[in-house]
Length: 195
Image 1: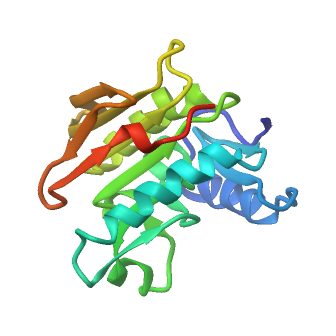
Image 2: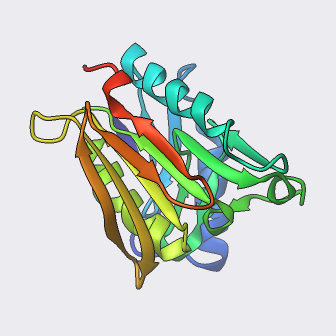
């Protein structure tokens, strides 16, 4: 992963607009993920086949339980200017109306965000993104972490308060994890590929 520092500290006003401009103009290799994490434009390499397979398996299951006016998105940028971030989660479930306003979608519009860790950026997903999504008020954050201490783990966070989530459930791959209402979805984590 490479990074380009735009400003230190939490961007506000024109600082935020400048960082977003740098993000928009970043020329990254095809398939790379360009995000703003705490005021720094970062470029991550394209995800592995296992990473993509895991995201697709969750994506497929989410469509069976969401309302017709919600979508599951893989490349949607979610803004969180409070932390100086613009995240591009592996998956997010967002009401379609939020995408049709003609402006960037605030992270707080997401009903669920899913991140699948990669070896190169696992700590961003575990710490910085968890904090950003909690600050934004995303109700549920699912972290699928094949790199967690040598034992792949699925952790569901919820009840965001003051920039922190509560762990609702954490299981090792191979066990079932249940997403609560409004999803009511049991995920068999044993189907996820190992790195």
